[in-house]
Amino acid sequence: MRAEVINKKAYVRFDDYASEVSEYKKKIALLEEKLKEASDLFKSENSLRIAIEIENIKLLNLLTKEL
Image (cartoon, rainbow, N blue to C red; front, side, top):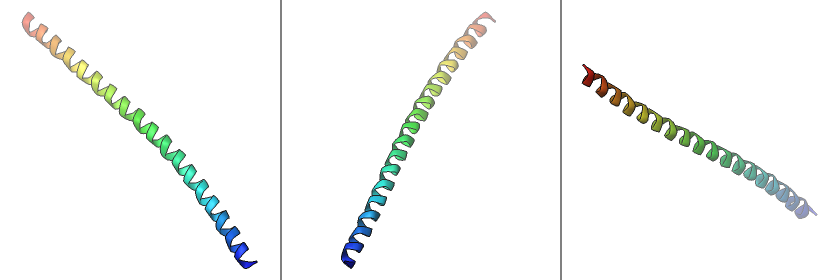
């Protein structure tokens, strides 16, 4: 009888831990997705900055040729 109670408690704890692990896995997947989005945004922003710098250099060259 006592062994059955201990086994039942162990199963309940295992189920609780399995549920927690499942929740953590979901949260980790969500965080990984957000991290990828942030990384993509950073790459896009960096590309835009480079494009703006190139255009600024072109404009500066045109202005210096005019002078």
